Structures are given as structure tokens and as C-alpha cells.
Length: 133
Image (cartoon, rainbow, N blue to C red; front, top):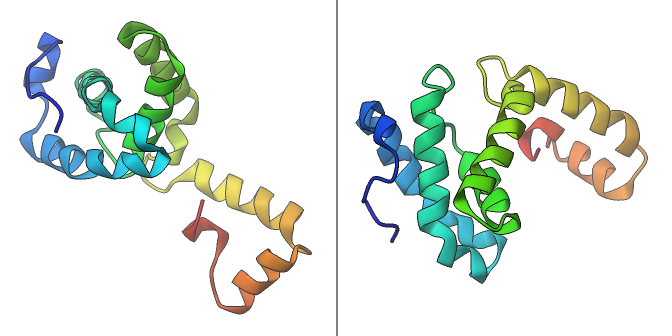
């Protein structure tokens, strides 16, 4: 389990329910590989800082996986946060109400994958691309 110690003072203003949601998701990051579990403290710190700096967006399920990727690919917590923050600024539409980037991505996937056997199979079983993106 990640440490509950604060490494960033602004996260004191983060809503307790957001922290609880995030902490429920963190153990699931191990689906990305066993080495991710050693980075749980860094991942948690990135997410807490994000929550403090962008309270309007807040925490949404799945953000922990994005933070995990940047934590793994970076040599320090500061580098990981700067990269994560830049990504979140550009990809915010994946999580804002209405999920505008999700709709765009699903439409693009539909266009390029429509003849692929796996995609045809999913569509025949009423699985929409937005369900697995």
C-alpha cells in the first residue's frame, strides 16, 4: 500500500471522496506489470497533485493507469508529474463530462477497424468501441 504521507502541501484541499476513489483504483495498476507495484507511492503522489491543481476535472476511474505509465517511464517524480500534467492538459477531453475525446477516438477506431475480424465479432455481440477504449 502506498504511503499516506504528503509530499505536496496543496493536496490538503483535495476532497476525501476523491482520495478514497483513487486509493481503491491504485492496487489495480498492477495489471500493467509487477514492477508497477513498486511505484504506487509515486503514482499516488502524481494523482494527488493533479487533484489539487485541477479540482474541476478531479479524479476519474482509469487515471491511475495513465499516471502509472508516466511513473514507470520517468526517472523522477518531478519528471513523471510534468509529463503526466502535459498529457492531461491535452487529453482532458477523455474525462470531462460528455467525454468528447472518447467519442472522437471511438469514431476513428470504428473507421479503421471496421473490417477486422475481432472488431466485427465485438460489434456482432453489441460491444461498442467506447466500451473498451
